[in-house]
Length: 314
Image (cartoon, rainbow, N blue to C red):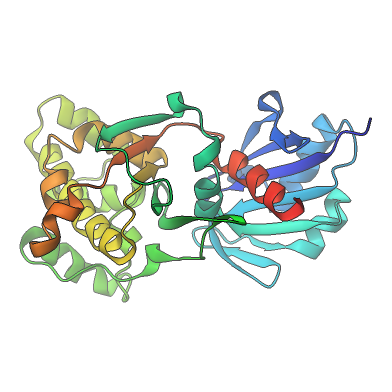
């Protein structure tokens, strides 16, 4: 009996994870991660991977890409890779190529994640099954995916929320947003709500350059400057995520994912996230009904790519 083999890729701004799905399900033993800096493009990554893992010719490829996808091509937002379906077909020998946004891939994974892969941060009453859900990625960049259940399967409209503009604010947050105008005139969300954004925020507030891991370690060690940075980051995240939640009403839950999300998650509640998230006037009670979770599965986007192909071919 012939086993259907699919090639899956999760292409981020810093690294790319690749795996194989057999008969529609991810083979956990097939996954491998690569540093993007070691390769000239996705085609080169996949060629290298298949040279070591090819058991049979894949019949389809789905790649979740950290950038805008249009007409069979994608441009990564935070890396100078242009991904072209025709080029990937030549390199891999796969004729059926599907490119989707990486956050969409994370959204498609929600129904396939084991319970141990989601850490509840704010628990709520169980919502109706047809409620919308939202995933927010915080890593090299930032974006969201809004997940709807339909009779045909999961539906996730495209989004590039990470490059929508930061909100008007006052105090330290307002000063930081104003300072961005000379660097990134449109003042995108991910300029502050991302790993690099956390470092930029700390430099603005404290005049020193630290990476996110160093900032969190300093906070845990009692450094007041690092604590101020994280408190500001958490407040801004609550404001922005609250705005996005009002736009989409994801009563089924908001899910954070990505390296920066994992790093700051233990600090969220203690530093006031819930209050800034829910501070929406007459809609505050509705906001307090939305659960919050953290996805900790590194293969989530690959699971989502497999789900996307299963829906396409059912």
